[in-house]
Image (cartoon, rainbow, N blue to C red):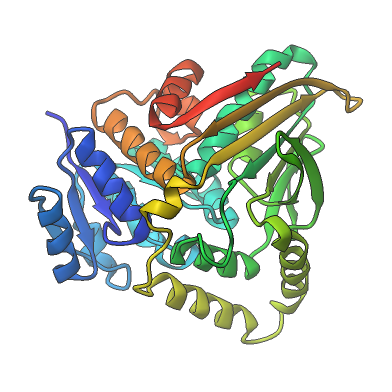
Length: 370
């Protein structure tokens, strides 16, 4: 008998998009969150869904959400502060776990700290399921397959034409940016995972609209792509959706990374991130999402830096895409289509061709590959 899909954080911005995408796929998820009245309103708007009140600040309420064979989808952030109870709930129950975290340290912890426990429990942990970091993982894997055995490095850029940082991002995205300031990042360099300062480097990508600047980030690709290509020496992941704010944001990140050692600074940033995430303000509305696109570029290079292949993928608004990807992954997991247990990257979980088909069906397609 198939388990249930339980969506925790359902009344948040990404949570609502995910709940809608699940229902459109024919699923009837259990929706969970802190506010009973908001849960009830969302459940009614989606044709009547089961609701459960749960709060990360009361971990036992989260632990009670799932049982063996269920799929727990967590859209509760910032994950570095609020995400642990959901991971623990899945591990205790032997339930599969899916989240949309874009926070480097949390993603790293899923693979390094929690992955071995998931293997013992017989469940899978899939983190960073959304525009970031699924789009880049897929584009990077396709570029590496095209490049063949000579590939020694891959660089990935994330862009969102139509987005402005001040008006077109959700409270969760703003909270993530603040929480990232309080943590170190990481990168795959010289054939190993190393700790680096957040947004420590910058480069430009040639896009159809012209050259675009992007800043480096710790991302799931630094962990997942070397698993697919053992000869891979370097992975670079960059976000370009900050646009003109890239350089100022990089400067702020670097300055803050030096300041977090000062007593009270890290705690203050974490408190601010939580406050932002739990605001009731909305993210982009439907009209704004309709004007925004997803764009990801992956470039594979040989050991001398010469280009071998490039893959460019384009599609719908990143938030819409993330909700659909979370829904697709949850549905595949609850229907028994995962290919392993432990902490898995999306290619490991589904296979490259199946992942490509699922991502395309969710609204992101390969526009060019050479």
